[in-house]
Each structure stands twice: as C-alpha cells, then as structure tokens.
Length: 201
Ligand SMILES: [Zn+2]
Image 1 (spheres, helix red, strand yellow):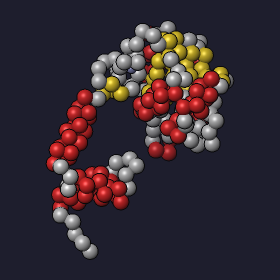
Image 2 (cartoon, helix red, strand yellow):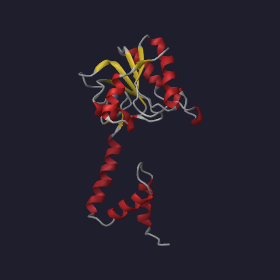
Image 3 (spheres, protein in one colour):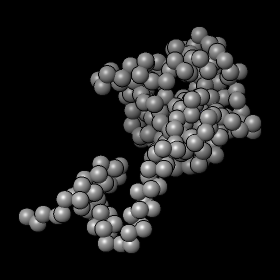
Image 4 (tube, helix red, strand yellow):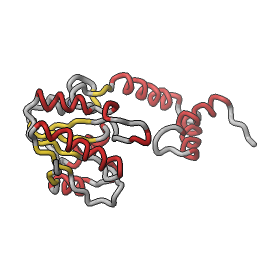
C-alpha cells in the first residue's frame, strides 16, 4: 500500500465529500493541485472561502443571494402575483435558465419526509403562509419533484393553502416518475410550467 503524504490525503478527503466527485476524481484533482502553479490552489481556496462568506439565503424567498432581498425578489419586472414553490435554491436556477417563469419564488428547503423526521415545521411553510397574507399573490405553482415525498408535500401544501383563497397548481412533468427539477432540460421545464394543473383542495 502506497501511503500518500498526510496533507495530500486530507485534501483528497475533503474533495471526496463534494457532490459529483468520487474517490478517483478527488485523487486526480488533489494530485493536480499539488503539482500545478501554487497560485491556482490559492485562487481556488480563496474563491471558495469568499463565496461561502458572501452568499446567504434571501430572507424573503430563500434563494441564494449576496444582498437582501435577492435580485429576483427585488426586480420590478417580475410578476408578483404568481409564486413558484420549489424544494431547493438549485431549482430556482434551473427554472431561471429555462425562462419559463417570470413570477417570484419560494424555496421550501426540503420536502416532507416522516421517515427522515422532516415535518412541516422544518420547512419554510410558515414563511410561505406569511407571504400569502402580506403579498398580493393570486396563484401558487408547486414545482416539486414527482417522487413520493414531492407528492406528499404538494398535497399537504394544496390543503393548507386552500384557506387563502388562491389558485394552487402543480407543474406537469414530462419526466419519469421520481425525477427532480435538476434532471429536466430547459424545454421540458417550460412545457411543465405551461402544462401546470390546478390541484384539488
Ligand atoms: Zn428572494
């Protein structure tokens, strides 16, 4: 067994925990970083530290932002009567890229999952209710994945938002069951948004 120097092992270990990077890639990136121009490693490390320090959750929608509120919440050209509910900030990016939606967003921060102990109080559902009271919203579009938890969360929201007298719809998916927004291309997302259906209360 070849033992790599301790600092290199530590670098591989921290890279391994990143999404989409397996043990092989972690090793390849680490070996590259310790052999390339020192400035390359310094720039990467600095960018990571600075981005982490600068990026926070928008207090209104829960999306990622550098300032409060975020650029989308603050954009006067957005349709403030329509709110799209998504699971994660990544989903906001996916929908923005598709240009299929011009309203405002609300990031839940997860999906209901009794198995994993995630209840309504663990998600930004209270904040959603507050927004419906304070903002002139006429339609809420639920854009959650089509897995069991996405379905359960959508039905829960449709029920609990019924009291607000608004239209609650859910986007149509041209996707295999169980897939999330991140796997949809831009055309599919546009069609899913256009084909949204009102949910039963
Ligand atoms: Zn925002």
